[in-house]
Amino acid sequence: MPRIGLCQLTSGDDPEANLKLVRSGVEAAAADGARVIVFPEATMARFGRPLAPVAQPLDGPWARSVAAIAAEHGVLVVTGMFTPAEDGRVRNTLLVTGLGHHLGYDKIHLYDAFGFAESDTVAPGAAPLTFEAEGTVFGVATCYDLRFPELFRRLADDGADVVLVPASWGAGEGKRDQWEVLVRARALDSGCWVAACGQADPAATGTEVNPKAPTGIGWSTVADGFGRVTAQLRDGPETAVLDLDPAVAGTARTATGALANRRL
Image 1 (tube, helix red, strand yellow):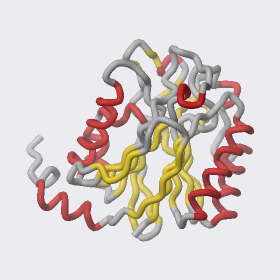
Image 2: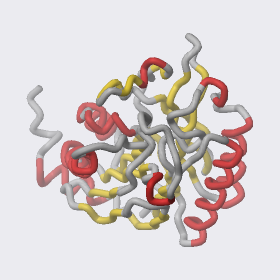
Image 3: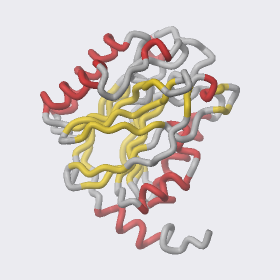
Image 4: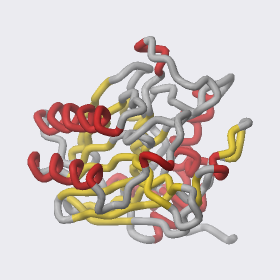
């Protein structure tokens, strides 16, 4: 049964300073027994600043530093970073590193919504990602991916029982409601646990950010395959550690028939 840590934080403009947040988050979660530790989207550098100057490949110094932190504590870390794209844009990448892995997932669905155009500066990914750790198959998704149930069903078809979702959710009227509904709905759609870890609300710590950028609302949420919320943080920086029983995914899928009874 994997023990998961969610490290809700507010990242800044400086990737080196944000590495310190990763280290302190890993130290806190690992001390509480977490073996898979999840950070938000854009942990490397927050949205609202130029991204191309900070983008690095998966074998670059920022990702290698996160890998070293994971190795030091004997854990797997999932965290948001930016990698260079071939066309001069960047890719919004989740780094998965530790416990024998060093992988990247490039966000497939870009946030061209609510007046924001992520695709202006970010190139989309194309391939879903699953991996095995702690005897469990995990999938990953990023923020706006939550609005697309077919991705979560694909991850379930690929064997995932837990989907980890780093995010930097955009603020605005009704957006927290949408976040909570979508986390629960994607869990129900797929039968998977969905563990969604967002950027904290910068206002909770008086942090000034670009008001037009999606820089987080907090409220990281974990839901099981029945859509039940089993853990939720509030708006400020916070860390939670919890055990997820992957067998619940199979029980939920059998009960709801959400995958077996598909006709389209």
